[in-house]
Length: 112
Image (cartoon, rainbow, N blue to C red; front, top):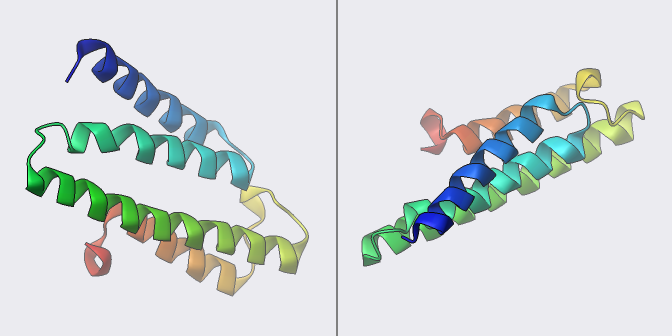
């Protein structure tokens, strides 16, 4: 991989993590997670081997499904509570969907 491309990917990872950690709105947290997903894909598929490309494709599909679930969770929470703030997650359905989405993004046991 080109050193400049690697530097941009690593910088994007740091930027996405910073945005996610510092956000108080669901859309900014989602934006940071998506930046992280798109920044790690070139690093996963770097060796240009069919297995690396397959792993990157599977990673992308799982992360896209988890992002969709996260957006659905935040929309459901906004529907029930009227708040888009992260700290106002009070509805049980939204909590369950968010826990599932974060578990998928982290690759926890049932989703690995």
